[in-house]
Length: 419
Picture 1 (cartoon, helix red, strand yellow):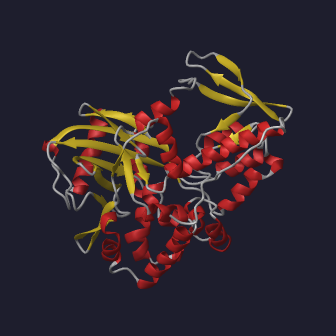
Picture 2 (cartoon, helix red, strand yellow):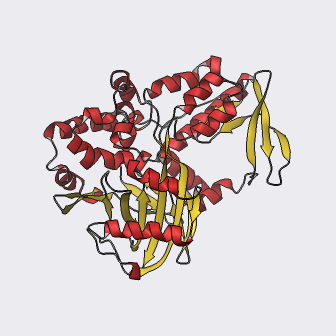
Picture 3 (cartoon, one colour):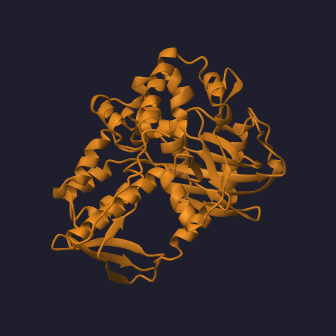
């Protein structure tokens, strides 16, 4: 996630939607703020036989039936049975949830698309995988599908002040070292003792710490871990990330409507989704390029980060041309736009995720004082990343307690049977 200035206001690029089930995030937001939330909901549409069909969380049952109409009944029943696993046990909202870990043992040698018909994958499943992971159904696995169904079953708000304000509040009391690159994790006698950092001016510093959390993409964590544990680093190397590029444009009139606020596109389009920025900001459109067809185009764009000038404008021209087939949008209506590329972008996990979890929990691969957090551990949603952070904090405290047995530890993982 990052922020930018659009038409004189700050906007979020990347993750910004907060599910009603995001208990950890909401609790922290209340403690840091409190921050006010505004409804966002789920409102996404697809094209069926040339017509727009909408799934709307304010009319969940009726719109879901309409959204699934024309899909094979066996697929719909299979999806409903998987949804029940998530609804009845909140642990299944995250990677390594017990029910989906069991499924993975039998199913993860094959990709997710083998469990549903091609028509259902194109109409329903792909909208979940490409949005959460930038991945196609044949690049995902059933054992990780609970994270997608959790998104499907939730409804959403967003912070009125934006995610930038939340990050600012979270980091305000901390000592932040920016524009510096961690080159090594230093370990002495089997225990973390600090990090080696390359400063912006080129000098190298050795900074001493009692504990280190690698809250980085899996590949970055692997590079920092490789000299200490080549086997665990190799396992992290296997976790895939797919690039994503976001353009947010402000127009002089509403582009979407109250009834249709977003539109998903199929695998033949580089544009995977176009949607209103907010329930009351129908004049702002967020365009997302992700999925297999988008990758070559994203690779041709210069390095990840903010984009401007003709390069960004060409992307917006392509996005508007794709949306214009179904919803009127014109270049003349633009007021302003911003663009940003994320690479590494969206985490697409690894099959048989329970094996990775077992490896990370194996004491033979443990380095005292070192913990991990990130989108590859419990899932790519904001709440799943919060869960991984909570587990990292628990690991640090347990390490601390091992050196001070007089202390005690109470752990609340925040599981609820249903809600």
